[in-house]
Image 1 (tube, rainbow, N blue to C red):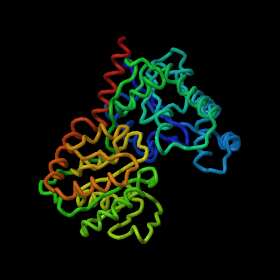
Image 2 (image 1 turned 30 degrees about the horizontal axis):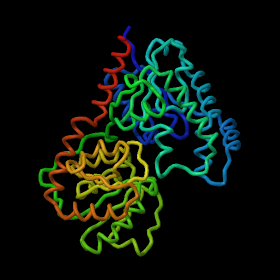
Image 3 (image 1 turned 120 degrees about the horizontal axis):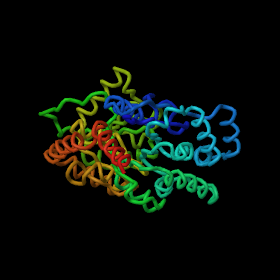
Image 4 (image 1 turned 60 degrees about the vertical axis):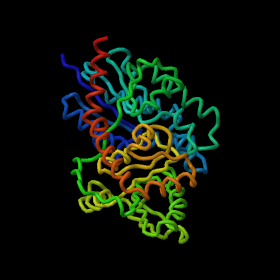
Length: 386
């Protein structure tokens, strides 16, 4: 029998519909669609708790601080065990004739399989990884964190193979959760685009247009970028900063010079998609100085548009953006370093052109969903043979 993948996604944090463009920041749709295209997907489904059960657990984790409340709720093993139970009801007997693949570790599929099927998972981050970031939620009790980490450890040790988007994250599973190295594979991630943009032979890098994309403006380092850009604008009066993503954003007057806010642009809306494509075409440099970034799909989409990237020197970002080759790396949270790097790169259009060309070539070679699914399926077949 030719075994395929049964994909599972769930929780309000990640999404409950594998083919929803919003689930897992859009990656779920493109990943599972490519699995389907390559003929390796049996089916995919999602899950979330019933409203009453969800409300009860939310009340048990209440905090006046909204971020702390949300984090404690999703960290709570009671929530995760309840979600596992919901998934158990949705699994069919024939699903165990195939391989089970869960997105993240919000639930424990290996416990449900009980050896009847090989179990895999795919991640852009994990709890230990996020807790080390400057953006980690403060004020959580040690007991809350310990229980959350213990649940994830249990899931990881029950899996046949863990797939990660980056090598940096792969090391976290090995070092933070003691997963044997041969059971964790870095397979990368792809761009969440319907089609590849055309190559532009005469792209203009002299216009000093900076592009920032990020719904979570604070986490993506938006305020640090505005502070740095204020000084850049004084040295380079023709520089422009284009901001896309936040649904609302109030920019203080003292930081607004040369800044254009475009709001939230939907890729599924033809007008918004056309505007976003135009911004990429006119951009000389993409900047995302995140305070925490599990992986980062936006830089890949910038590079396929021949736009070099300036990103934080941490997490998977330092793997996707090669310093001095496809862009530059900046110290996390450092406005001074960001300002100097902006001035350095914007002052050298020829170098921007070379990095833009190299970035597109790198994405086409490694960071497409087609390549990701092929790598992952190769590891799954090897695990099955073993």
